Every structure is written in structure tokens, then in C-alpha cells.
Amino acid sequence: MKHFINIRDISINNLKKIILEAKKRKSKRKNFNTLDADKDSPLKGKLLIQMFEKPSLRTRLSFYIAIKQLNGGALTLRPDELHLNKGGESLSDTAKIISTFGNAFMLRTDNDKKLEEFKKHMTIPIINGLSFSSHPSQVLSDVFTIEEIKKKSISKLQICWIGDSNNVLNSLIEASVKFSFKLNIGCPKKYEPIKSLLRWAKKNKGKVNIFNDIKKAAMGSDVLFTDKVISMNDKVNKSKKLKDFKNFKVTSKIMSCAKKDAIFLHCLPRGSEVSNEVFLGKQSKVWQQALNRIYVQKSILLYCFGKLR
Image (cartoon, rainbow, N blue to C red; front, side, top):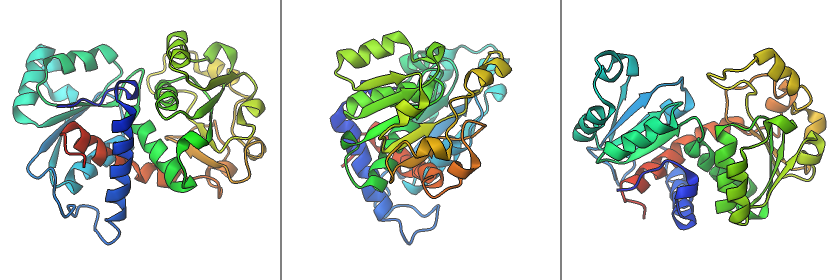
């Protein structure tokens, strides 16, 4: 049994296997309907239980479709309907019941401790569908998308992140170390990544560079990422934060600092951090990026069930 919680905890060999499996399975589905099962039906009869404590669109859809294409089933629990919230049932008892009925558990939460507590009491694999400090399924899918479009290993590319230091960036930093790619981060000084993560990256020979100038960060990059400045449940002075990021908007001018064939990615939903011209332009690959979540989620599930080929 394997869990999927943080990219840093998974070997590069297994991460590459997940990417390769996603590539193989995507190539075999060209004439399939969305809910048609893969021919080998590797997870036939398996049940994925999902719980979302935060809003979700792409993660919810992609995991549901992923398990269905592997010929398993999915059940989504609403936290406000469980005894865990309303009836005073302990988290440990809830975890044991979920382990008894299901075969894997995907949790989306803003509480990292809750994720670890569930893991402690579960006897089935647990998958991080987003937590306060990490969004590994999103970033691993982004690595897949980049290599699919660029047709080369991400280790040979320069990636640029423009914006806030959030859970997606944390996982991107971890990925940059694991996959050995250069990562430039452009953000205001007081919004730089947490020091402990940067120390971990440096200790593990990460190629992470931080710029407080958006143009310098974007210069010569193959891929430009950004994300909403105001994240879900962001308990800050929103107008002040938006003002702090007014010079960190991805526009055509900023895209011109990157390589001519650079692509633009955004994990969505979007806000004012990117211009319509860029988001809807030829360099934007956001829809392909979103769709690819399905194929990587399938590989993550197979990894957790010990069925990667």
C-alpha cells in the first residue's frame, strides 16, 4: 500500500513511472467515450471514496473520471453530512470506517494535520487532493503536460512561476528538485516561499532562483505558470495583497521575455493575475493542462494500488 501526499516523499523512479503510465493510457483512449473503461480494467470493483472540505472542480471531475476509466467506482462524501462534523465522531473512527468500506481515500482539505491524522488511522491508500501546503496531483499533471507539449524531459527546460507562494508552488519546488529542472520564481519580497522548503531544495541540489522583478524571472523561460493571488480561504487583507501584486501580472509583454515558443499554464480558477490576451492566446495550454489531470490521476491511483506496470 502506497500513499500519495507530497511529491518530495516519492522516489523519482516512481514519479517517472506515473508520468509514463499516464502517457501510455492517454494514447490508448483516442476512440473511447469518457466513461468507457480501459480494456485491462485494472481497478475493477475498487471503490474510491472522496471527501472535499474545500471547493473543487477539476480535482473532483478528474478523480471521478479516472477511477471510472480504470473500471472502479467513486463515492463523494460531504463533510457537513458526516458524524465527524455533526455528531462528534472521532477522526480515527471515521478513518477506520472509510477503510472498511472503501479501497482508497482522496481528501481535499486546508488542514495538513488532518491529512496526516487520517493517514495514521487508515488501512487503505490516502491521496492528497490539495492541502494547505501541497497540491501534488496538480503539479505532477503539469509536469506531464509540459513534457507532452515540449516533447522533451522537463529536466532540460526552464520553468517560471509568477505569483504568490502557495501550495501549488510548494509542490512545484519539490518537483523541481525531484525532476532536476531550473525553476525561477517571481514574486514580491514579502511573499517569497517558506525558508524551510528553500533550505530543503538547496540541500537536495535544487535549482531554484527567486526574483522580485517579474521580467528577470520570466527571461528565457520555456514555461510560465501563475495562479490566483487570492487563494481559497485566504485570510488576508485582499485589497492590500492585490495591490502588492499589481506588478506581477502575466501580460503579452511578460510573455515576450520568455522564449518565443514558451507556453502559459494556469491551474485555475483564474483571477486578475493574467491578461485575457495571454490566457486565451495561442501560447496558453490551460485546457489541455486541465484535461490531463484525468490521465495522471489514473496513474496515481494505480501507483497507490501497486499496479503500475
